[in-house]
Structures are given as structure tokens and as C-alpha cells.
Length: 469
Image: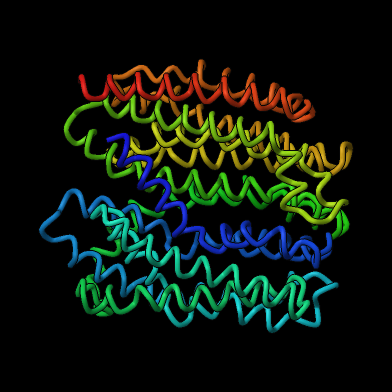
């Protein structure tokens, strides 16, 4: 179980966030040819496009997952109809996305407005949600090799394209848009044939309206929940733009998210890996085993984030070959530690979604997003763009732990997840990391070794409990 969790997490971490990870690996080379303006344009455009990204699938991936487990003999019939519906819907979504991009391109990038627009909507127009549906199938069938192969191929391609466009052709922020477009098109294309011909999941356009209507009744309450990801990860940059914070400052803040994006990818990967395992445990009424698996993932995250944060200064010096931008490491510490919310959030959300109590999800996730937005609107004018890192941390802590105190969760829960203990540990480790990052290297080595020892000891002890249940 432990081997499967970690191996699948490593594999799934590459697939959904391939371009982000590829860009991360290329940073030591490309940052020499980038400025805060380049990061600013990229961050602002990413913020606005993410504002409506939740509408791409209308939350229907939840229906795909549930039908796979609850109707194992008939799920393909439902999937084909949802696939057909989403293909038609994505033309509407692509139009909305293109119109938004046309309106919000920053003045410094106005000459590339139409190119940015077309590069963003291209994969949607040609392939819709092909990648989403096919990768979901492989994830639920626990066939990570299908994702791993694509991750390796397109990861290398994305790294090469970023270096080619940014460092060789000196295209600045446009290099990211072009490489994302090319990788996005080819990534979808690699899933198109197996989805439609090998798995025989061809879209049905003459879908049953009743099936789609019932599916949307389950999925649409999740849209505010998924929208919270935008409010937490991207709205701060949009708010800065709307409050006339200069593009360079937004770029510096975007740089602080460099390692945070990697942790976000790892969090998504953890969810993809642990989801089928925990869902099966819920189906077998094995709540204690599910809880312990969540605890293992939480401790693993503590080890990775704390270990990374105390070395954040050195990491930024190595990755960000721009002295001005590399000074943002102190914000990176807070942002990375905020992603420790993810494992405990998965413990709450996976069970809620399995029992289809989706109406409560938006109260937690959208609530966290609104906390982030409101605090940013109040505090940024007084304390500057840096305070957005702290508001993000506060919002994520709410998102990770508030759900455990809702009545609907207590009614379906039989295990004690100790939410207060985990949030207290997160805060303590964050404070320690914020100050430890400035220590001399020998001290950091000692602290890292101690952290690794206690984390591994705890993981194996909890893993033993899983097999005893």
C-alpha cells in the first residue's frame, strides 16, 4: 500500500502539471533571459484565464469517477455521453476564454494580444476534454505507466521548447505561451487515439438529456468548490492588477510561487494517487485504514515542504539566475508551507464526494477563496503585494481543516482525524522554516537529517497500523 501510494504520487505528479514541472526544471537556464515584466505578464494572464477555467468541465469529472466505481459494468455508456456533451460545451467555453483574454491582455503585451488568444484556446477547440477523460480512465484503472510515458516525453519536449523560445530566440513571456500551446496540442493528441479507438470511448453527441441533466445536478454544486482553487492560487495576481500594482511587482510575486507551483503539482498528484485507494477503503467500510493513509501523506508533505523551505534561499539562488528576482525566497517559504493543507483536505473531501454530499463542499472551498480575496482587498493597499502570501496561507488552513467541523461530515465519519493537532504542527513548522532558512548550511544539514529520521519513523509506524486493521 505504501509503495503504491508513493509510486503513483510520483507518476501522477508529472501528468496533470507537465508544463509547470518542465518550466521548473528549465529555470536555471531561462531565468537569465527573463525579467519581472515577463513574469508579470505570465502571472496576470494566468490569473485571468484561470478565473473561468472551472467552467471547462462543469465539475463532471466527479460524475466520471463515481460512475466508474458505482456502475463498473456500464460506466462507458455514461462516459461517452458526457464526452460528447463536453466536446460541444468546449466551443462555448473557448469563445468565453478568448473574449476574456482579448479584454485583459496587459498594455505591455498588447502587440501580442491575438497570438496569446489563439494559443490559449487552440487545444480546447481541437480536442476539448480528451486528455481529462482519458487520463481519468487510466488513473481509476491504476495504470500509471500510461501517464508516466507521456509525462516523460512531453516533459522533455516542454523543457526543450522553453529553452529554445526563451533563451535562444529571446521571446520572453511569449516563449511560455508557444511551448504551452505545442505541448497541449500534442499531449491531447496522444490521448485521442487510445480513448476513441483502443478504449472505444467515442463521444456520443446524441446524448440522453436526462443523463446529462442528472449529472449536472451532482457536478454543478462542485463548480464553486473548484472555483476556490482559482481564488486561492490566482486571484491575488488579478487583484494586484485591478488595484494598479505595477506589472513588475506582480512578476516578483509570481516568482515567489515558482516552488509553490511544484508543491501544488505534488498535491494534485497525491490526490490522484490516494483517491482510488481511499475510495475503495470507504467502499469496504475501512475508515481507520483510510485515515491512516491520509496521515502518511500528511507527514510526507511535512517532510518535503519543511525540508524544501529551510533550503529555499539556496534553491532560489540556483533556480532563479536573476539577483533581483531570487530575493523573493522568503515569500516562497510561506507559500510552500501553505500547501500542507492538501492531505487533510483530501481526507475530508474524498469522503464527502464518495457519499455525494457535494452541497457542503462549496461552503469550505469557496469560503477559503473568499477569505483570501477579502483579506487581499483589505491588506494589499496597506502592506503591499507581499502580504498576499500570508493571506494565502490563512485561506489554505481554513480550506484544509474547516470541513472536519461541519455537521454533515461528523454524521458520516467514524474516525478521529485530529484536525487541530495537524494545523498546529503546520503553523509551528512554518514559523520554524521562516527563520531557519537564514541559518548557516551546517545547521540546515543537521535539521534536515533529524526531520527525515522522525518522518520516516512515523510513516512506517502508521503503515503498520494500516495492515493491522
